[in-house]
Image 1 (tube, rainbow, N blue to C red):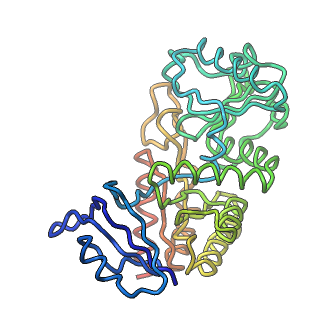
Image 2: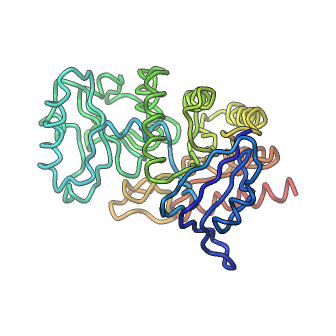
Image 3: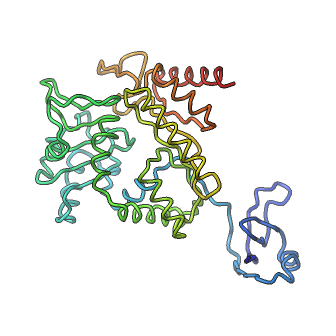
Length: 363
């Protein structure tokens, strides 16, 4: 077993009685000493397999933990078109054209981080994207990750037309005549579009994306992360990375529970989360709980509110209380943390009521 002595640095300890130290000693994944260089040298004297790292005055801080991420998606997005800085609709189109020119052989173009504000009140629609790129499908995730804006070619690729019904918990944007606009909200984005895109991704693609995310985190000093929407393919990528020694960070994940309209199928997802939690209890990856999207967001007017939005719309929750309550109760009984996205006041009331009833039922 190798023991490592780090010395000659300025180490922040967060201990009010000793906020700074010069050296630390690590063995078997635990700190066995923190203090002055001379004392650390004495502590390590006689250790058979000792590795010494000279810090040369470097500052050492505890690792950061990203408390809400989606690891594989993060890694993939590092190579996608970033529209966060788009100034207006014309600038967004110009960036999309330039990205298309840079990737002439890509079968489809994927980007994200766009905001509603630069559109200056114009509703995002497929025609605006068609003006920039019409020959290939375009998929643009909104900055809040609750909707996807697509062009006409992408709608065709997804098999979405004016008669396609809305999925459970989602909405296909339509104009006054009922024609699909190219906006996909909530499970229409996270299900119809994301599931299709995920079907095109190979295990090798996921491995590369995860490696990119981990590399970016380690460069920034992030040593742990909480993935707040874990699915099977992404978990498999994490496990491959851990087995190969490529993971580099510790991950606590919340298993995504998607609404199906079938109570038995909803509860089966909780059982799946519990099985993974038990299987991975002692490793660098663990399933800490479940993630449930009770409603949408304010930006795209998909949050479940008691009163209508300014445009007169008043969407309902993704999970009504009668469907949510048994899932929350089962997850709590299984010892899983319950993380719920609830933005609107109606959705918040639903989430809190489900929690109260779970506590009453489970003790």
